[in-house]
Amino acid sequence: MSPDFARAVELLRAGQLVAFPTETVYGLGADAANSEAVARIFAAKGRPADHPLIVHLYGHDAVDRWAAQVPGFAWELMEAFWPGPLTLILKKQAWVSSTVTGGQDTVGLRVPGHPVALELLRRFAADGGPGGIAAPSANRFGRISPTTADHVREELGDRVPLVLDGGPCTVGIESTIVDCSRGAPIILRPGHISAAHLEAVTGIQPQLEAAAGTPRVSGSLEAHYAPQTHMRMVAGERLLDFLNAQEQQGTRCGIIGQSQPPLAGMLHLWRFLSLDPVAFAHDVYAALREMDHAGVDLIVVEAPPDRPEWVAVTDRLRRAAGGSGGA
Ligand code: TXA
Ligand code: MG
Image (cartoon, rainbow, N blue to C red; front, side):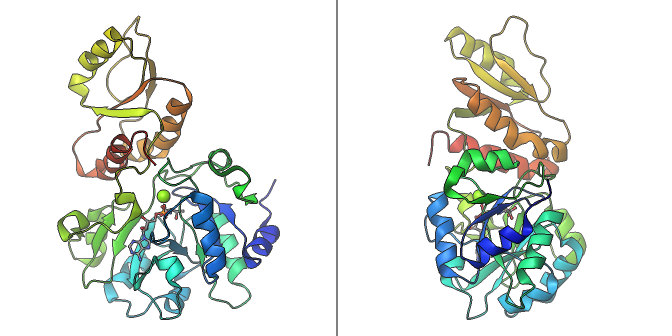
């Protein structure tokens, strides 16, 4: 069945929530120009109100309605990567509500690379309004981001009146976030679009927020992207010893591995993900969710290689492990 765009737009205009697919993860959307509607997002997710949301737009030409003083390198990034998994933090226009920006003087903007999201955004903007849809990932606060419509229903149930189904997300982890409001690009959250990609377009080597000071993204919280089951990341060469020790203690593990073969006779549950970082990212949240449901005592993830192309995936896994049993 094709997505019910007419009903989705009707709900958004009435200040209600609509979940929709993007190429990264599913978003929980509301009219970004309506503060009451945006407040419903925070209520449905159980998310603290000082966490800013990303405003999704149908195209570059909507940027000036939301952002002011857009630097040249930000336009270059939009040209190169939109529609796509890149969010830009820019100085906001004065009218943009602090409900969306978490009280900051900046706004996060993104044109998502998914046909269902783009069609929804295009129709929503068709009345000549500013047309932005504010949307965080469509999970309960602190939990694993949803990459299918079923995950969204599992997370939010009847807290969201409509979930547009666009199939499984192709990228699978959240967009790269680049702060463009402080003179030079600063990566606040790593993602599919890497530092090398950004540098190739702008000629400027982006800084990493970790070096720049206090984290401002909610993804920076320890308890983010977390399964409910405790989780550990273990280096490949220590994995079998670690699992043997767990087995001795009677701990049943769910293993997300890349290199080790399952040990014959072990009670643990194994799931193998690709040695390719793009394919790994595509499957990692569904795998964590599956392990969470399997009733194991501990989720063990074999640590990915320490190489630049694994930075985004490792970031999410590290946070998931840090946030075990968290918010
Ligand atoms: O791929 C994605 O980015 C997905 C899809 C739905 O677009 N969205 C997503 O939203 O991951 P969310 O809310 O889960 O994460 C967005 C991050 C938050 O950590 C938020 O703090 C940050 O973007 N953010 C938004 N506006 C910001 C701003 N003005 N300054 C700093 N960080 C901002
Ligand atoms: Mg999120």
